[in-house]
Image (cartoon, rainbow, N blue to C red; front, side, top):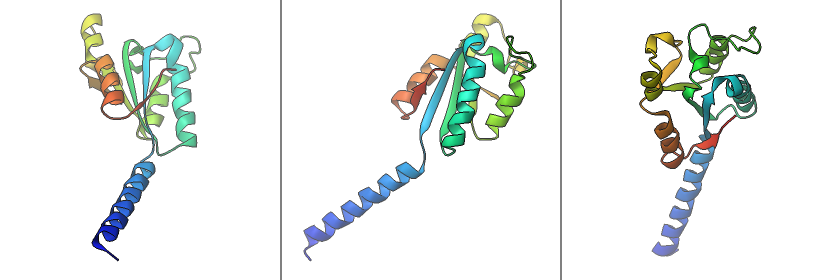
Length: 144
């Protein structure tokens, strides 16, 4: 065997190993919610179903505008008051889903971080965060 063929075999093995690691890591998805009334319950159900079928998926939920409202302490679905958002979010948080709130929205709406459930995280700009997750970190985009 020549040095070139050994090198080619090594590079092929390295490429296959790297490919396996990427596949083993699971998909990465950002769910974008900007309207609680239209998207929150449906989006949380989609995320639960997503994880039931593909449990190794990394999911980040980015909220802004009226989409932050389901993350308020005590928030319930206005169409179905039996749906308590905090318990649904907490169950998904236990499955490693991250929920991020746009700080520009807080400023524009006069909201305080203390109004949100403990599972909420904060990001300087929801729109910038969605763009960066897609462009720089390879997250697929879903808007429920």
